[in-house]
Image: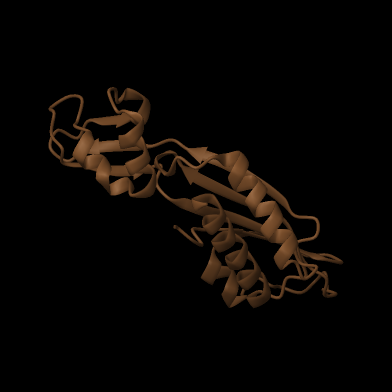
Length: 178
């Protein structure tokens, strides 16, 4: 059920941001799932699709959902060694389950492979990241209009806006990190 709660948080955030930015339709969202979350991506994708249908107000009717797993990378605070989750051995299923629900507990089970210190940081691979939202605003736009000064572009870190009969707006930012 963890996947369903996360999926709902993602869809609600997408809807809220889209309304705030005046988007009429969302065509694509890109989500990164940290390896430490150990989310079943099939269940998560199914939950996203179902919740999008349930919450749909026309905004999400043709949404394309892209999910990518972000590899977990750790860095020792003592010797600065970096390693991945694959470099860790000897963690049984019960401990993996604990890490799934509370990634911070990994410090109880893992040591730096080089110096054996339990003092390390998680550089990547934790949480759920709504990396980008691509949507369409069906307002008519003057092809000569300069929209580079739209405050919300800076607020949410737009990386592209194409001017034409339809505005095709893409966000690229850390919107939620659950």
